[in-house]
Length: 101
Image (cartoon, rainbow, N blue to C red; front, side, top):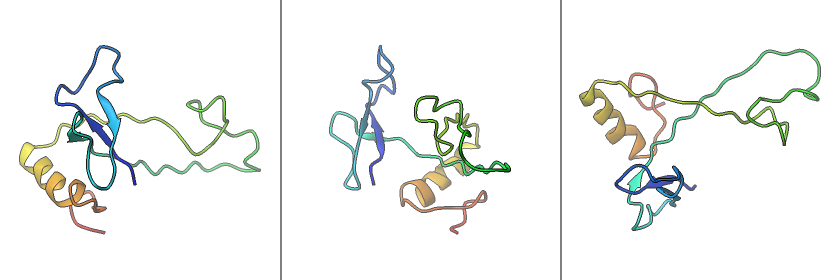
């Protein structure tokens, strides 16, 4: 499983070069900070066949399985650190209260 990693500056002039892909073994030396991944599982109720259904984020491939989402993190610092330690860094899936599923 690959993961996204960033350099310590967290941005670059073109907003792309600061990010690199890592692996299960970690991040590349030039991009040592792992970026937590969030997964949104959204289901749309539709009738009929999948033909003709696609998300606006995939006009070319016309897939109904990919979209972009933004997260604005404004958690209490203690709570966020607990989730990072117990869920993100250990690559575990946790519920909204930080408990393992």
